[in-house]
Image (cartoon, rainbow, N blue to C red):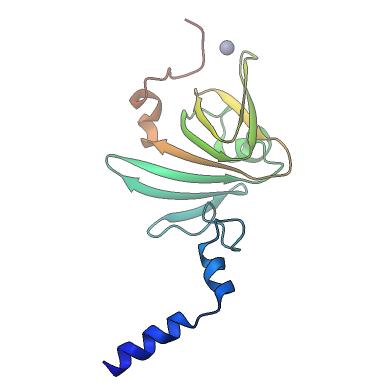
Length: 156
Ligand SMILES: [Zn+2]
């Protein structure tokens, strides 16, 4: 009883500023929720891209943070060995601005907030000085098939 009471009063006496700080939306609190560590995630950095992966249902959810200046053909291509990125991407661009191009010259551009569907067979890069944060739904090797994308960008 005594213990409970003192805990309560301590909380009540907490300075107002600290309280409002805790309630402030991300970006004002110093803790950016969009970039904060995710409990249970497998975190890796590949070619400057920070990738957090979590299993979800029969697939995965990934958070990819592409730094300013990142370009798939410059930074990732040497590690992957294909001439274009052959992954399909389905997700939500929560921050930043990206552009890309398919092998046939068709191009795409997304600025957050934006739903992103990118077919296999593309290059892509970050535009501007802000990291791009993509929340991606992923079925590993079967992503394109699972979401009904072609195995490579083409016109019917
Ligand atoms: Zn095309």
